[in-house]
Amino acid sequence: MTEKSQEAGKRGRKAQKGDEAIYSLDPHSGLSDDMRRRLLLRRFWQSAGEFWGKDGPRRAWLLSAVILLLILLTLVAAYGMNVWNRAIFDGLEKRDSHTVLLLSMVYFPLLAASVCLFVGQVYARMTMQRRWREWLTHHLFDRWLVNGRYY
Image (cartoon, rainbow, N blue to C red; front, side, top):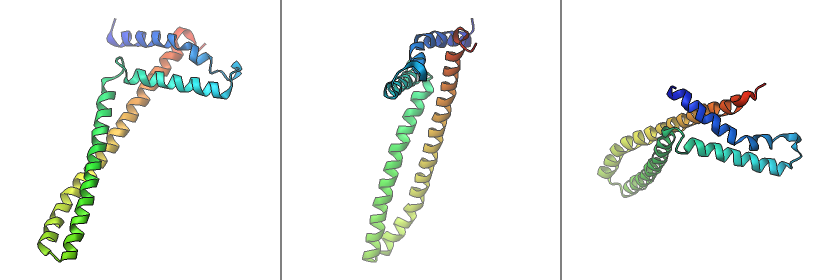
């Protein structure tokens, strides 16, 4: 048995366990809207837990850590811009041309780092979204195809 077929079989067994939540979300089941919303939210957290769980893709945790790191570095860069802004205006107020020239040279690397961090953050976030959508699509198709449910 190949690795992909073993993985598909594992996902199929997981899909069978979660069938109760799917059937109880039927609009004609007599459940209130509030109860259906709660069941749907629980089903979402179960699926999300599988994505970030031990059987989920390892890239999910890596991308989550990268996104968190980039957010923190972007905050540091924004703080650096604020400190730079205060220092440059203090230098202008004191008419200190040497400090203003030095700070003007510091601005461009700070700006470049800030832009690169922001672009990296957007790229990492979009990559995470693509991976999540791909995994969710395969997860839902496996649930739908198990036991010939599509008939």
